[in-house]
Length: 102
Image 1 (cartoon, rainbow, N blue to C red):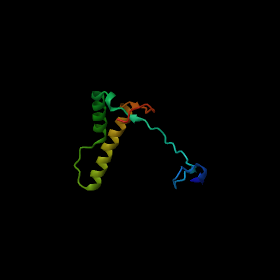
Image 2: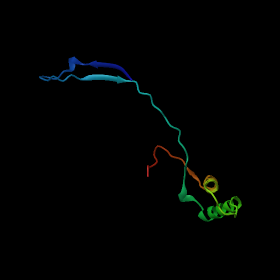
Image 3: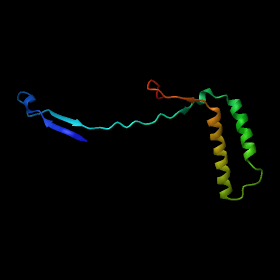
Image 4: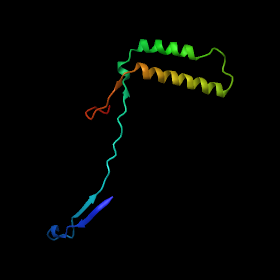
């Protein structure tokens, strides 16, 4: 990463043993993709609840859970339903350079 390193002896201070060092670095700038963030403040929560209840009602059978595999499958279905409703119902906010971090 260091492309040049040089001691500037001609810029030594009076009565000092300090020498300024000029160092040039080659630093690559890595930019990341800006991802949209869900804005949960602007959600119509009544509509969200109705849609989620309807979606969960269609996805969930009424039989009893008997083992871990069935429990994991049900939890996965519930998580998928919630994420699907978030994707459909929650508006997104774009982050700009002037956005506050909180």
